[in-house]
Length: 156
Image 1: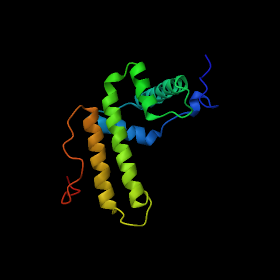
Image 2: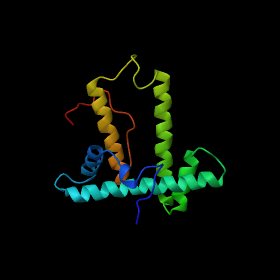
Image 3: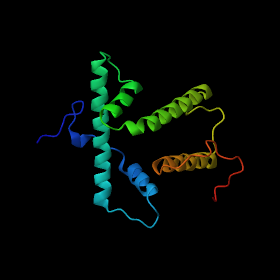
């Protein structure tokens, strides 16, 4: 069986950053659990396949509506069609959060603006907060705080 073409590339050419995916996998598991390299590779392959599946169905939804650009609504519809309806609310919330953050970035002059920038410590604290929120969502927990406390220490 030949690998499926993805925009002129073979399936083997489509991938996700291995280091980032390994970090996500490790953060989702208890500290005493180890994951074999083969299992990590398999999880990454599953993520790539899932993205391909959602992208393909989103494209079909888009084509049925005679549109040329895949919109967020097409992705949400694709999730429903593929039987992932229980994730739609969470995906939509993440999309809304992304829109809000993007709008705030553009008002500040973009990510790389020379205006008021985060210090390395603030960026690290923000990154840790975002990882904690993602971990909580994955574990089905309620997220209590959207903004880091100003007096929060990096030692926590």
